[in-house]
Image 1 (spheres, one colour):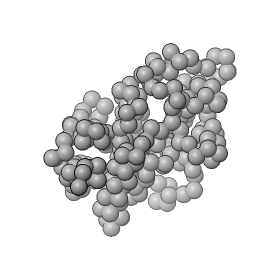
Image 2 (tube, one colour):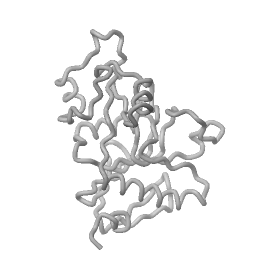
Image 3 (cartoon, helix red, strand yellow):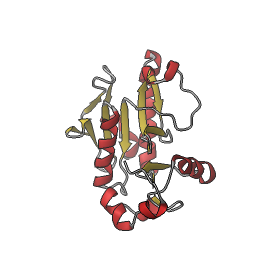
Image 4 (tube, rainbow, N blue to C red):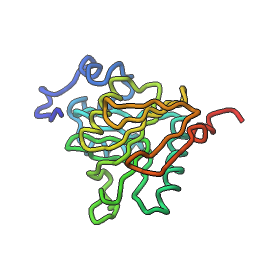
Length: 217
């Protein structure tokens, strides 16, 4: 990760941003402070003062991309996962504003995530607004402004710190890409069933049920 030392040495240009994140809309990049110089404190300040969620990557504030259908899917998946996980007392399901410090200078906000209780100190959630936690399952509901390079980088970040399972949900195509490693993936379509794998053994979700609210009744 880039660790800013001085303002002059670390401010990133638009070309730098596109190299890191692909052709990302610059409206999703925070420019206060300038890209390359942002800190965790800036993430909290923007969230508290403007109610905007930014991830922190290489000193850059990158706004979470989420529209109405993406939010609907994330909420539905959170509900279905929570209904299955809670009676089994397996851990905690977190929604699309659950910020996590995966590593120093790296804050990610999966749209849905699950953490086994063993991930938590003393098996308690605590009060830190950005806890240093690594989810067992990270879910991203893809938006039109998400770039291929951005999502490839997220896979490297997730698996690089110990995430065990990643789901990329594509609302427009009605597909889910299931990753067990950055280079190991299976694509599921709307007629198939999503399984919890080794992270949530026994969990099964027909994708037709997950996507039902997006389809005409």
